[in-house]
Image 1 (cartoon, rainbow, N blue to C red):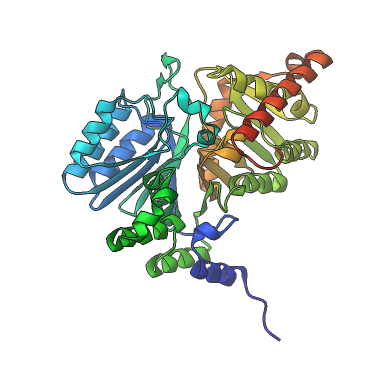
Image 2 (image 1 turned 120 degrees about the horizontal axis):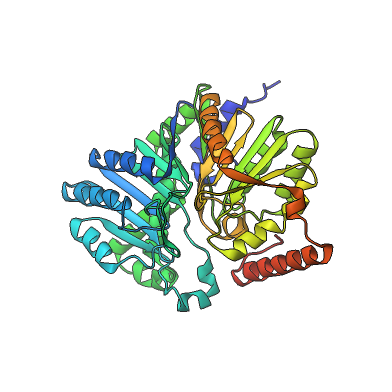
Length: 439
């Protein structure tokens, strides 16, 4: 009788047969190093330092890029790296970075930075094309295949907001710096987004012309290989070895796209919430999750888990605040505690469960992140890291105001009216954007 295959052997075989990207569940690897970074004040110097020491390549995928203030130093590092012969690739979202000055892009390209725009659009007329509502919301960087950065922090000064201008206090945000096997899927993701941006929206129209030119066909095959994120033998060995290690830090890179990993981030969060025994801390500016997550949070609180939500106190978009607040009463009835961050804008996307599991990334708990956008998170299973993150979050909660149940309670008909309005608005938005299924 054959012995049942161990989980590690199954993971090893899975990684050898397919790229990590084919997996719908997180693929954890051991032997990683992950460092927490608070705001651009900590991220940008670390990023610039890595780029200034880059020897071969720098790959970045960013939603917003701005040359003002702190972020300008990173752009200077990119130009210096490109001028000394490092291969620098930067893909940015066409909407998020749509207001950046053209002079900035020209200077980057002049220095040798290879630039790609993901779904370029006119900020006003482009909104009429509902297929353009799916955006690339990731914040990723990989340097020399050795150092990686992932989180919620755009390349924009902590004190500057595209809509509201400059502020005295920095917005709250987090990212992580990583080393180890978990870098490989991050690099493949950026390359795949770059590939999709290079193809553009109408690449199928050019396919017949590409097929007639053997040089262009060779280039097409290279692009398709990148887009599929196939692992070469060296990468297969690195990831498979990492999957078999049972040492800190065990980490998994997860994303949300419109191919095979539509629900990977959401399902990972849901599984962690369902397994919580002691506490759950969620920090997000936009909170309007699907019903399974709301039910899981309520059930966790009902069984004695300390559940806390840290949401925006200073609103950047009024509709986002309304969407979250129509859920306050529902969550508080089961004992979920809700706090609103007071000092400045909140932009962090963090979920911390017990002392063992945490995720930091770009994904909010709202329809745009969970159904439409391309998002990227890092999951970390490591007690030392989770304790460090919990300590940082304790400061954030201390600077916030708890919303008592009496404050959140409106008359029953007003509450129903507001919830109905938000529900119908979300449904209409998702249908227009082409999202299938119920939310």
